[in-house]
Length: 201
Image (cartoon, rainbow, N blue to C red; front, side):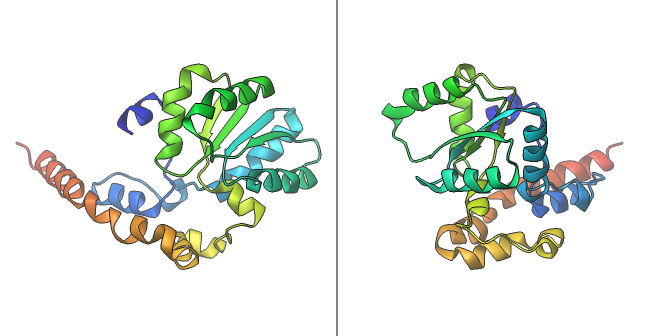
C-alpha cells in the first residue's frame, strides 16, 4: 500500500478519522478537506459528459456496474461509459485489460474495495493507458441502488461509517470495529514523534 500511495499523483482524505488524526498531530486540516465519492463522482461525470471524455468503471458484482451505467446515461445522455465487473479470475486479467484498452478511457475508475483495488492498479499500472485512474470503492454500488447512500448530514458529521456499518454489518463489522485498533501503535508513535519535535531544544 505504501508503494501505491508513493506512485499516486493525488491523495485525498475520505474519512473523518484521518482528519482528527491530522489535527491531533497539529496539522491545519479542516472538515471540508475530506472528500468522498458523493462529493466528486457526479460533478466529474457531468464534466466528462460535457467534454466527451470516455469513462470506464471496473468493479462490483456482475451486472451492478452495467445498471449503474444505465442510470448515469439517463442522467447524462452524452456520457460515454463502459463497464466490467470486478469478479474476474487472475487468468482473466489479460482479457479485462484488453477490454479496457479497446475502450481507450480518459478516466478509469476501479472499485473493488480496499486494498484489492489499490493492489490491482499498482500491479497493472504500466499496462493501462488512461489520463486518470481513480479508486472508487463501492461508488457504482451506490449509484445502482445496491447499497443505500448515507444521508449527507451524516457525511458532514463524519458518521457515514456508522450508516454503512448498520446497513452492512456482516461485511463491514471487522473493518470498522476491529481493524482500526491495529492503527493504535502508529497513532501513539506519531504523537510521540510530534511531541519530541515540539520540545526539541
